[in-house]
Length: 79
Image 1 (cartoon, rainbow, N blue to C red):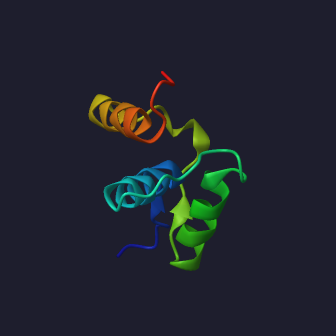
Image 2: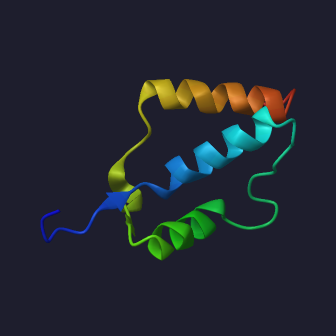
């Protein structure tokens, strides 16, 4: 690895965890217990990876579609 710090988007971690929990039949909540990106940021830092800046831009369309599907499964009736 060169001397550059690796970065990763914390919201991708949130997406991965939510997807895993939903697949296990659990019903995670978003925002009611705090900002999930803060915990994801801490997890990335503990693994030596810097969180990507929030201004990194929206997720690509495939991720947006997956998030929409998770919202339909976890929060039926909320669009």
